[in-house]
Amino acid sequence: MHFSFTWLFLLGIPLLHATENRGIKMKVQNDQAGLSNQRTVYWQGDRKRVEFRNASGRKGTDESLQEIYGPRIVSITRCDLGQSFELNLDASEYSSRPYPPKPLTPEEIKARGLQNSPKYVSEKPTLRIEVTTADTGERKEMFGHMARHVITTRKQTPLEGSHSEPQESVTDGWYIDSKSAGSKDGDSKEIDLNQQLSCDRKWPTPKKGHAYSYAILANGSQPREKPEFVTIGEPETGFAVQTAMTSKNTYTQQDGTRKQSASKFEMHVVELEDGPLDPSLFEIPPGFKQVDHIEHNGARGAFAGQPPDFWQRFKDSLAILFSR
Figure 1 (cartoon, rainbow, N blue to C red):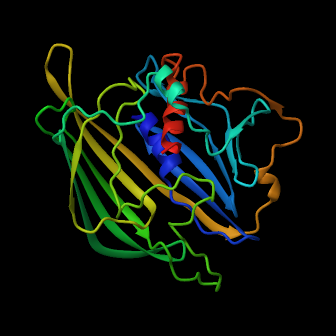
Figure 2: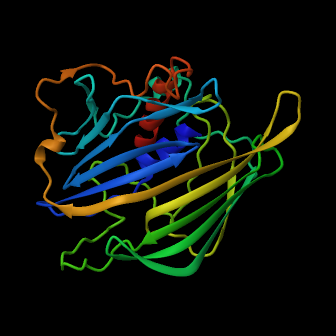
């Protein structure tokens, strides 16, 4: 669950419009299961910088939650260079790779046990995903823009032949329009959800499709569920400035008994401003050493127990996405 939230945030967050000589700075607070972390994002033209620290937790002898933080990490995307960089600020190290990722060849896909063409469990739908969107009618000003209060319920129901369990999530959020009116001081401060870095993957907008993920990391050759989607209400396409998502999941234990778990993930933008940005934010600092890999987590990080090929499979899955 932590993995999904982290990468959905990194890949799915909308971009803000910025003119050539100005930039956007946004600071976002995330809270889940007693753990908190903060991300700061900068955009300037065709450059992006994300600052973050991964957090995990474990219970102490007194049952209190002990937070464990990884190093301070920076991710920089430079379309003008065709490169992305990761920096470990604590170790003064960085890595680089082409961006967007180079697509895998058919031979590489086959050798790594991945699939380029989806293989479904059944020709008939095996999952019903029902998404209900309701505008409460409430409005309030946030960061100089009028925000609307929208509640979205996503219900997953297994159908015949499914190997999945029932799930339900409710997202209580505040959103501002994709192109809002100017700020009080007369500046444009426009938010454009369709604006992306020119080298970013072009994802479909919510009105044109639905998002559904499957366990590619666990077993790349595992057949996918075939979902059918039911949409009730007008899908929310605005920019989220505050959300609280509560999820309920049903699972089966080894003895066959079924139980239900619940989790809550909260996000809110704590800072949003536009203005001049220092160009050095998008550069490798002097004295940093280039390495092959940047470690995001501490010794007991959230993914310390993953198999050796965990991150390779993740990179491969992204490469497949970019090849389509």
